Structure formats: C-alpha cells, structure tokens
Length: 252
Length: 172
Image 1: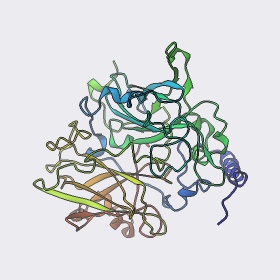
Image 2: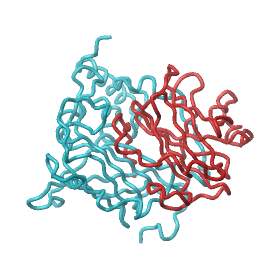
Image 3: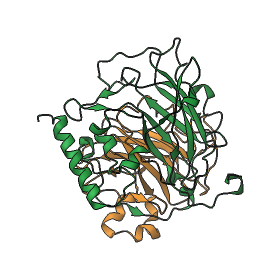
C-alpha cells in the first residue's frame, strides 16, 4: 500500500474540521474515531459508551505517598552523569478538578523525546541521536495547592510514519490522577506556535479549536530562572467529582 | 471548568509507565493470590501489543483502600492499584486478590486510542448485578470475567464482534 501524502491527510483533516464547524455542537475531547490517525481505525469503539453511576470504588483514587516518588524524579536533567543537550526549561502548573479545586498530593508522570526528537525506546527507529544524559521520564506529587513542577529540556519534533513525511509537534506526555478513578487522564502538552499543529492528526483529533488550545502551554517569563532556564506554564483540569468532598479537601 | 482533552498514550510509554512489580498487587504465591488477565484485541481480532491497563479494586472485604506504596511494592500491604502493559500477543495479567465488591475497575490506554477508556470486569458470580442486567443481553457477557488460568479471564475487545462495554460517568 502506498503511504498517503501529507496533502491527502491534510485534506481529510480539513474535511472533518469543516463538518465539525457546520454541526455547531461543541466537543471538548478528541474523537476516538478519527481516520486521519491511521492507528485509530481498528482501535476505536464503535458503540457509544454506557453511562454508569459510579460505585463506591470509583469515587476514590489510588493514593501515592512521599516514599513512592523521590523529589529528584521531578528533575529530568540530573538523571545521568552529565547535562542533557537542549533548551533547559521549567514546566509547571496546577492540577484542578472540574470544580476548580486543587488535586493535592497526587501523582503526575511525564515522558518525552530528547532535544533531537528521539525517545529512549526500542521501537523508536528515528535516526536522531540518543542523548546519554537524557532518559526523558519524570514523576512528582502535586503540592497542597495542586502545583506540579518539572525541570527538563525542550523535546524535538519527530517523524512517525502515520503517512509519508508525518511529523509530530514537540510534546510532553502527561499522566494524571484525580481524587476519583473517574478522573484518570493521559494527555500531551504542546508548545505555543508550533508550525506542525495544523498537520498533525493526533492534535487535530480534538476538533474544537478552543479545546485544542487547552493542550498548549504558555511561555511565562516569570517562570524563567535567570542565566539558567526558560519557563512554561500549563494547568490541567480533570473532570468533576461525584463524591461530596471532605472538609479537608475543600479549598479554604 | 472545562476538562483538558485527552490524547493517546502513544507507542513510546514503555520506558516511562512500567515499574518493578507494577502488575503485582500482591506477591506471587501470596495467600489468596489470584490472577486477573486476558488479551486486548482490535477490530480485526488481532492482538494489541502496545496497550496499558490499570487496575483499581477493593480489598477482599470490599473496602476501598487508601494506602500509598503502589510504586514501591515493598511486598506487604495492599494498595488496590496496579498497572500492566500487553505483550506481543496482546496478553496482560495482574496478580491480585479477589475483591470483596463485585468488579475490578479498569482503565485502558493504547497507541491508536485517542482517549482512555473505562470499563468494569465483574466477578463470574456477579451476573445478576443491576448494572449488568440493565445492559442489552448480548453485551452483558463482555463485562463478565470467566474462571480459568488460575483466576479470572477478561478480554478487552476495542471494536467489532463482542466489543467490550466501555463506561462514561455523569460528570464526564
């Protein structure tokens, strides 16, 4: 089978965007059935999800403690003998629930490519160099106000064979837990102004432009560290909770 | 507030999400240890070799556990949470205990899957559960585990014949 060109995939993306705009119904999550992302073709459910009233188990989430996560795991630039190559930066923000309450002392996991766009993963065959000083995986617990903070380097874009000459915009994968099982979220954070946004089926699978923007961090000069690193701010909002929050969970 | 959109877990989580003993909620051979496992299959019935499943369950008495230590896995205590990845044949398994409540709560992530999916794997003797009975009869069995392979078997079919029932909750 001949690989599709970017122009053909871009046409598919544009047709779906036009049809979304014409429908006028706002969708805030990606479509699971999004043909321009070829790997989704056989992996999206065809039946609508069934609404369930959460049972007791599902209105609680796993708990991670200070002993589960070493504070040093939040700095992806100190995991090896030397400094990684790339633009050093701080990425920080708050994890909030759907009612704006901070998600406190909960696990945040990140993983990313190195500055050359290469992952430390056997299946990544992109012939960009591995960086012996960069693994690209970090963890932290949010603080009492829901803040997370990582020090890392800016990941590069990389080719991914969805179609001929397909390139992913630079991104950091984020894994988040809330206070309920129902709030689990895995997503990707992007960087402002990436020229690859319009070409990328994964980003464009979120058809609503305002919803897509929620995945883009903001450059924040107040977060830079003088003579050391740039800084980006990205807040994450999980779905709302079903359980009535305990008094000590309510923001005072 | 409007929730942040999800995105696929992608193909390259393998050096980041797995951790030592991630799929062992109790050590192998612990008293009462059972296996919960199965396969993840796509719309052609082919294995999905790059999926992640997370398990969240009550303890044997049916209590929701709020104990840290899932990432440490010190070999004692029970946190109720685990994570595993599928192998080349789409197979996955957890070593755990039989929960006191009627189902295991499961999150499914995979390359090609643009947002996480939630489902429930009910114990074989929970067939008269009210939620199951409210489902169309031909879809109920997709949420029921069967006995076998030293515990409970549960296949996740992302699409097509026998497509697993996936869940949404009132608040999204």
